[in-house]
Length: 102
Image 1 (cartoon, rainbow, N blue to C red):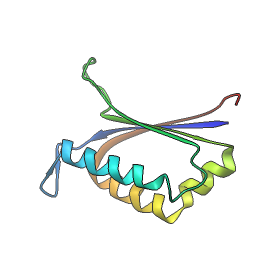
Image 2 (image 1 turned 90 degrees about the horizontal axis):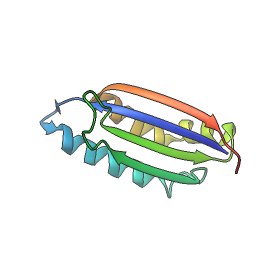
Image 3 (image 1 turned 120 degrees about the vertical axis):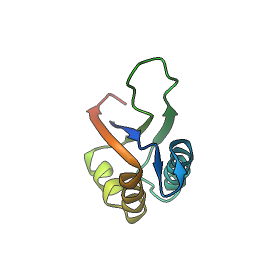
């Protein structure tokens, strides 16, 4: 199994939407991917609780059968549309992919 983790720091305001509003939009767009992309086995979205001084704002944890399934997700048109939107409302991004046993 492959776990794909992405974290974002969001801009304070974009196109008249606050950081919180854009985070909610991103959350909904990502949750909407679940039924559209069959390769997604598991998806979690979490927002930072503010316990650290310079945190990322949101984390996405997804799981896939293998690297090919992750690639299918990343190249899926619905994911590409979400990714394009996220790139307009974030200031930073970090990614970790790793293999786990079942």
